[in-house]
Length: 95
Image (cartoon, rainbow, N blue to C red; front, side, top):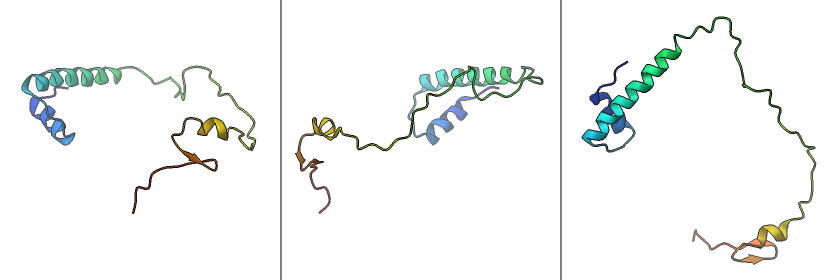
């Protein structure tokens, strides 16, 4: 599939990206190459290939869902610029 410069400029305008003449020419070649590669994927015979949700035999680590008190308030507030009674103090932004 061939992308022309007008299409590249249209895409750039939709994305609100300002591009120059040389950059448009480069993008035209790159987008054409990408679409050609995607077209090649359509030639692969996947008739007897089962759909996959993942490639490897990966299992996610599980941990017990327990409610805890945390106990790390001091660690969390240690780097705060200003605290009061165990809470962050932030400047007022709305009058």
